[in-house]
Length: 560
Image (cartoon, rainbow, N blue to C red; front, side, top):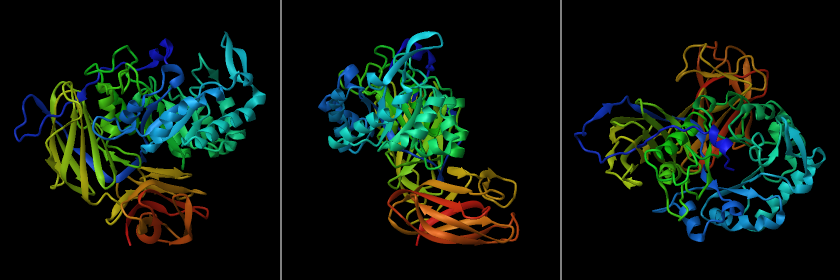
């Protein structure tokens, strides 16, 4: 919800979209020479769930049928959004308002999440908070009833053809000037005692500025954490330095991390088409995905004078900037490591899925850049590209050739370019061999990334030495073809024998597979197991069954 106070927390940065020009052999001046942008297709980071926005008929009216197609379709002139966030009205008589758009989004392949601002009136009491009278909170004897209220909404949407993917406990409980406040302790109590009864994935706590003090208690409490499926946060005014969340990486195995609401850089009237201000959107998405490692990015209102879609239903400059991600980085794709800042004002990120690699390059500078892109652990041939600038809106550029393992592209000043190429080998995790390092792009439980013992590849290894109940999980192993896969594990174990349980997509597929001693923690050996995997993205978890496990350097996945 917009307010002048919240607006003060937003970052007002001057950004510019990378305006790529048609590729020619002699680049026009002036340009700067950038460092290589290296794309490591084997170094996988987070699974991407998608991009979306808020539909709020009670406050601004519903999207029209045509606007639903523009928002959630992915053809020409459409945004390609894959997530719609809807309002849990405290009055069940108003729930029907949410159905039409949510149902159409699902029909177009999207998912639906929901957030409440207030419980029903009879569950609320007023109190004085920090000297402010008539602040609202949920009555302490109404927690179970409130969980049932959320459950009733889950059931209603399912019965009306708009089944939810997840539901939140509370929108911005720590910024509730116009709705219901929750303290971190109150959220923790609800998550421990009541969230487990909700018949949907649960999102918590949706802090307005990604303030960790409200989510830390959940992560540090095993019972509350078990009842949370998605850690949701808003990044209003969140600095890039505060986007990483080490505690989530340590404790959040099996959980997802979503950015569930923002507008950026402001909500000024008729600001949606301002250029180069709209470049801020692409730059902000870059930081949320790369530095914050969020798996979803959700705008506030889908249709507004500062939003991806203007009030007349046409796509805005901010919308085109967002579409450079939403149209091409589809649900189920995986972010892979890329040089995130190869030039002073150039920001790159990369993703793979459907046997494609997608690279998004944002040039915020006022000078054009000749950027070289290098593909590692995979190769591609022809590279298609789309460009948005002050004068272009997702305009197709000339194709490039990456058959040599790299390609040069001219990134004009203040522009954003998306490159898409089919992978011809490597990087797929299906019929080719793909390496996944243990120290990056994984979730470690009661283990740590270390580099003490030599002989590892990459930047280190997962250290299980001396840990009890240690586990490592790769969250996004992409397979183009379903079937049995070979998983080669490079490990070190000084003495004795250790056993690991193996889980694929949450199901145990191997019980107590033995790892024999290699002779020292500096001596590395390989062990191959076979596991079933599905088409698309899979998770693979290795879990110790004894007092400790072997140190793990990497795994390699290939078809049997």
